[in-house]
Image (cartoon, rainbow, N blue to C red; front, top):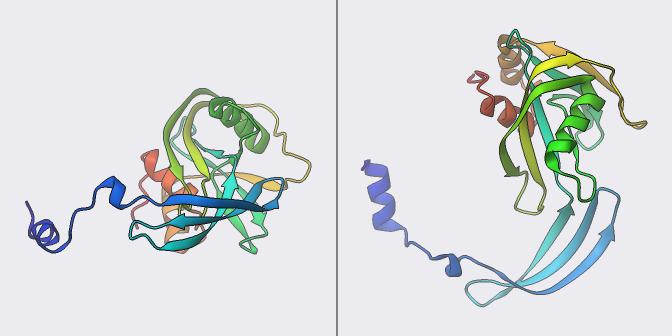
Length: 195
């Protein structure tokens, strides 16, 4: 066992799950939107004190890493109002109510890039920002790509570009690619992004 782990075990008490959990005693929805809902929750902390939590409810989403036969990656460029800038991202989109994530991944890949995939498989599902949101994003890898016709939503304006792993690494290093799901998806797909 390494020295850091030994020091941690000597100096930090191990807590059970019950010693970590919070209990919700009151929940009020304060905002209903098309993509998110916001609620305020009063919780009892493990030490018995009360705290207020602001929770963003989200239906969930998918993100896809489309890899060409040559080992390059299809990415989209689009303006993101919340970030106030154009971002380069892996294709992604929100789940429709009761939609299967696999079907959503196929739909979003076609809508945003114009590609279909012979192989599409999920590599992970992750909470994007669990400190205040329950958004769960399912990350897929797509291979065996065939070009069809891009079908963006009417409020979606994006460019589709293909990047080599070397170009991607440089764009991450200079912070041009700065989207968390994109960087995680690329890493899970085995793209060398170490800078």
